[in-house]
Length: 128
Image 1 (cartoon, rainbow, N blue to C red):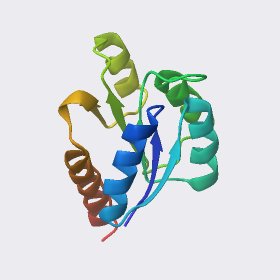
Image 2: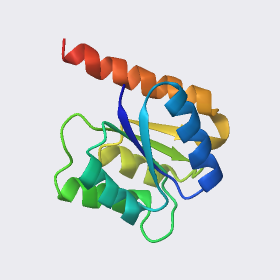
Image 3: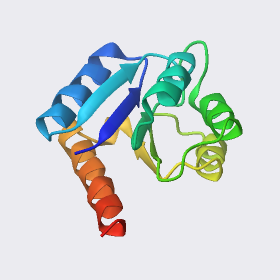
Image 4: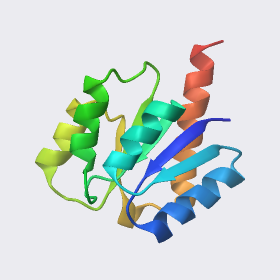
């Protein structure tokens, strides 16, 4: 299906997302802060990045700024996963190229998998 990178500092949550996405047939890798995420995004060229905003070492906004600066590849969808209610940060993330914002507390891992599957099918339909 798709190569997905989860950038989330909560290991338990990251593992839950990884498990459900693997069950949906995706190849999934994880990073636990924005710095690791930037390295993996550069090495692995994922099609979808699931990105938390508040993390140690480098948060999601800084990740987006650096990822864009180094030349974000075309066709990469970034979904923000956060409980942060700061509207300015959410808007900033969207301005920096995030496709969607999901509140973690309101989304079950299965619902997240459905969003990912939709993005994958949308991308596949563009190539037909």
